[in-house]
Length: 431
Image (cartoon, rainbow, N blue to C red; front, side, top):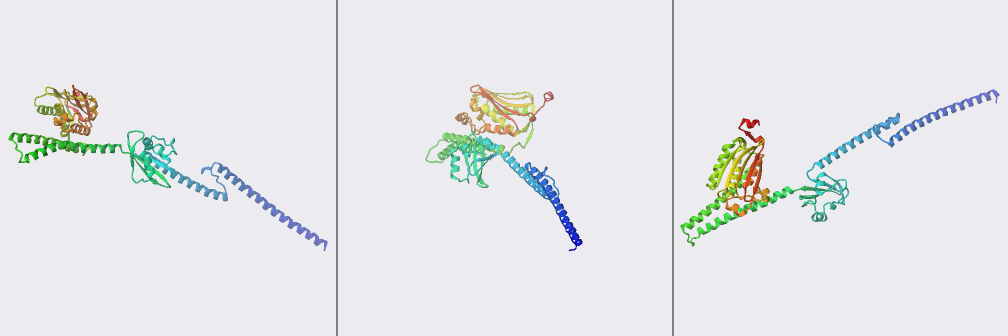
């Protein structure tokens, strides 16, 4: 080959080799730069993963910016959902804490997972301390243990609270994945009301039994033509029948009065009642009831107007007056008084009668409660008078106070709040 051509070929090959070298060198540099970039982005992402937070997520660039933006959007949505769930859970817990019933959430093994404050009071437990404890550890009543063993939760079970005198109604409700909810309700008031209703029916039946029996007996006697009855006997029988009929009438009237008082919460016919003539009228009725067998006095200090129902207050006050007359021996004294104690008004009846032992005083306003069964019936009482007094005073935001000592007499006071009392004396009003 011509040396010139050989030299030219060598130079050409050298030029091609040099071109290839610089191309691969440039590619290598670019690859190294790409690796360094992605390594830096990955390092930043790994640092973020040690303490991940939406606010500190790296911005990135290039494809990393797109990926990290998608991750940021996902994390933000997840945090918002988590916040909504936390808010819903807190509302649920707040609602559970506000429930008047006790709520205990149990797992499949009847271990406590959560309870509200009402349940803590009912069972004497602590939501944190007793977490995971079996329910039978804090409700040990045999009836409840049997209730769990039977696994028939369609009806509730009632038992006395282990921490108080309350009566609890417990019901187990299944929900979720083998979880159960123990609901506890304080039914003490309902139980007491039911007992009162039973006692009321029994007492009414007992009160009506005697007069009905007497009336039936005399009717049968008077209707039997084979029995010879003189005019005097017939007159005596009719008098006794009339007495028993009046007794039934008084009882029915008192029952109707109580029913009317309980049917509304406030008197409908309120007016301003001048106290002095009102008390004087009660005193006249007391003298008529006494038949001059007692000394009946009146003391009114600070004449006022009393806001209330004249009909209801007359019923209440006359019950206090008639009790004083009936339970004060002949020759004793009964005094009706009105006075101001600060801004409050006080109507009272004081007597020198037989008195009441202190242990009876808290129960005097119970229906049909009698200190002395025989004496109360002999004097014509129905056992409902002081119950009527209590209801009337409650409707007038007033209270009944009783002081009594056996053998020395009693004082019954009806204390009215200041907003129901208007002094007629301007000086008193200014004071």
